[in-house]
Length: 311
Ligand SMILES: [Ca+2]
Ligand SMILES: [Ca+2]
Ligand SMILES: [Ca+2]
Ligand SMILES: [Ca+2]
Image (cartoon, rainbow, N blue to C red):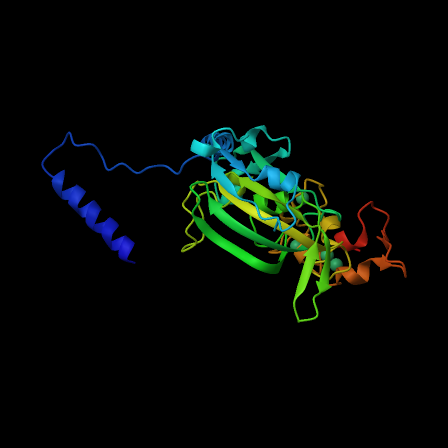
C-alpha cells in the first residue's frame, strides 16, 4: 500500500516535471531480468566465492577427537593465504539442471541450464534419499556475503519435493544419511556418521525474483546452505496413495512437480486420484504382502488404470 503511494507520487512528479518539455524521455519501466542473464551472473558469483574461500577441510580429513563436524568457511587472506580454495577441492562437485522460466511465471519460453554446486565434507555412512523422500536434517542458509537468513540447529523433517527450492532438494539428495535416531536416555536423540556438506544454489534454482517477503533474501541472489543429512524415510509416499513419490516422476526428469496427469491443481505426488476419475489411485493399483506394486491396465491401451480416466 505504502509502496503504491510512493510509486504513484513519483509518477505524478515525473509527469509534472515533463509537462512543458516535449523532448523529455518517457518514464522508463525496467523489464524483468531474464533468467538466462541472471544465470550467467550467478554462476560467476558462485565461482568467485568458491575461488576466494576455504573451509575446514583439514579437520574433516583428520578429525580431532572433539571435532563437532561443523563446517567453517573463511576468506583466503592474511594468515589463511595458503589455504586451498573450495573451488580446487576434489570434494566439490556440480550438476547441471535445466530450469524453465515458466516456473517463475515468465512467458518468454526460456530454458536455461543452471549449475548447482555441492561439497561433500563428510560422506555419510547410510544411503542417499531421493528427491521424493522426507529427510531429517539440520541446516543453515546464508547469502554469499555471509549474512544468515535461515537455520535449524535441531533435527527437522523436510519433504524434498515440497515447498522448497529445486536447488535445495537436488543438493540434499547428493548426501548420505547416518545412523539414528539414537536415544540418549534423557529424552533427546542423536545421529552418527551422517553426511555433512555445502550446497551452492544459483537464484534460478532458488527463489529467483520471488523470495518470500521478510525472508531477508534479495532478488537474484545465490544461496549457500550448510547441511547435515541425518536420516530419511526411504520410499516416502507423500500423498499416501500407495505409490512412493519418486515413482510418480513419470517423465523421470527428477522433478516431481511437473507430472500432473489430470491437469488439476496437484502434481501426481500430491494427488490421491491421479487421473481424476473419482476412484482413488490406491484402489486402482495392487500392492502385495511384500510391498511390490503392480499397475493393472484393464482395457489394455498401455495406460495403467490409475492414470487412465476412462478405466
Ligand atoms: Ca504417492
Ligand atoms: Ca517429472
Ligand atoms: Ca493431478
Ligand atoms: Ca483414479
